Image (cartoon, rainbow, N blue to C red; front, side, top):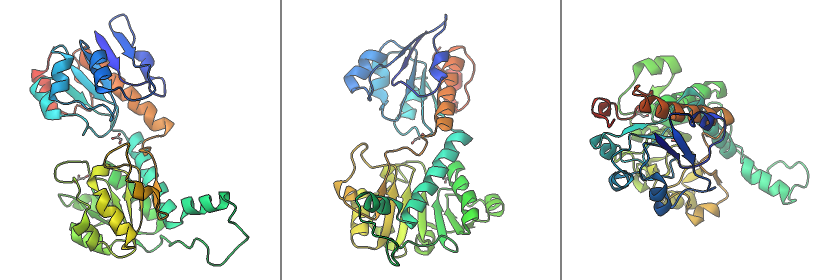
Length: 328
Ligand code: GLV
Ligand code: GLV
């Protein structure tokens, strides 16, 4: 069968794709494919290994052809894929969640949070620029974490790993989730709040919900106004959970003390005002970028393709309901 991988991946996973049974091609371009290139390369393929930068909707699935059996997304999130359209057409969709990737995202969340609380990026920039004149009592004062409150929105796998790490920093942890989870409360020592309560009590707020209709722009002018003055926001989930324009306003007015972002509303574009702000830390969607996480993601994405093409149900099937009526 024919397999196409839309981008070269780090690690060894792709070595397993080429075999006597399958013909595998990996894009040689060091960038996402344009939609024309994407269609040209994927038409007639049985399996695709895609990235978040590939948009897969009904028209794209139809253009690839009725032989397409699986879209294996090299990511935890799959908001780049119209899963409903894939399911209707009998196309299997898989993703790559694992402890390795979730822990990498949780660690990056903490890296960002600490960068904000201790102004690491601003201080680094000033030091490199030659502004360090010797110890001073009042340069780059940050805030201590101990005794402060961390509000976690979305206590799924990543959110709970972030919560677990907060214990080590001596923080109080609040969480919000659609359904209260008393077992997690016991295990992690976290307290449930409704969204408004969490926003108004937390010194640091971290987002860990998936992007859905419900969560799109859930952090907007009205929710930002409920945040405790001077609090900090961290987003390693999806950019579109935050209304970037309203975020800029809240940062400019000083209502929000700072923000650390790994994801953006219109990636790879970033609101230019954010780039000019000192109380903002920006990373280029690298929360899962550890060797360990990316190797695992690659192996899982390849496993899903090999299993599906051999008729075996893959792990991490996003659209469970497709399996019995999948294309063969
Ligand atoms: C990255 O954002 C992912 O969903 O894996
Ligand atoms: C978010 O992660 C949720 O499960 O509500």
